Image: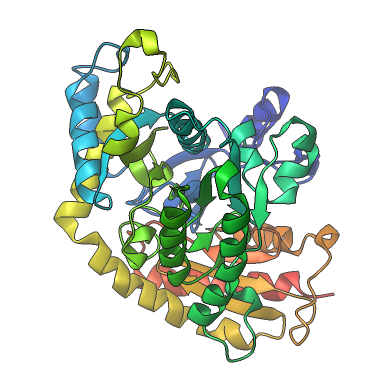
Length: 449
């Protein structure tokens, strides 16, 4: 068995996500045979440093011994059971742990299968809550420009990245879009906090005008990940929480990508000391092992659905694999690693090193900005550094970075012309230095005319 054989077999039957399959006529699929820590290995013996945590899900390395052992134990007792009318210990324990570690007041946990499903749950819960209270005029959602919340239709509707959304626009519900606090557009000398505060005035204005018809505001706290890893200050979250309370609108925090330590705290909302009405979690929830998501919400929202069956207030949303025992057990093992290995404090040192190894990129003539929030670092390539004129997307400079880095043993998957590091937390300082070296070489290769 080798790469070429498996790649040919793959292309004869499979359709891959976020991929123009025609690209693989001259750039083969890479079949992975084994993985350990931050390293992936293919069938020809080539190794690749997983600098993007396999799409942001892997926290503690591939084939992590703690998670492996937990799954093997769970597999011998219960793999899955219906979650309507039944329960099991792993689901209960994980929900108890999530209630314990999320911001205060999030006391109810609803499981789903993936990030998009979690967003769908939160949107429907918010709408249904207001309906149960007799406020049937509340039907709208407010979202930020450049946001991304998933690709099922409800989640896609409240996102704002045209690449994913534009094609399906006729199928989507109308939403209210507010300009982003994205600090890429700060004035010279203006702090992130000042800019985010200034931009909040636009959100305040929309809330004042539309609160009576709005169910919720949905945001990605601190980092708009699929939106080119654009970042903003935590003051925006604090102001938004206050405004949502003032105007009786729910706040949905989509922490699917930024949760579980990515931003320097366990959850990004902690940096503003706020509790959202709904918190959506997935990706790192199981350490990158199995699909699982959770929506955390308040007792107040839960009670609005709690009544006699004949009142028809129940939340009738379900997934066949809700509360899957194996996924919940992987989640428990992931939470155990956080608790026992002092991960957040260790990440502070890793994030510091990440910033240091990326210092050279600030002066690069084709880099407009190097930005970082915790364990997420982004390098934005532009055609003109002074004016920040972007490269035309048709030139696919990011793809050139991707292909060159792979040839040198690093998995980088840029977002357009934005190269980012979001590695597993088990990466070493030496590996970070090497990653930066390869990224530099890849950028030099990609910006050659």
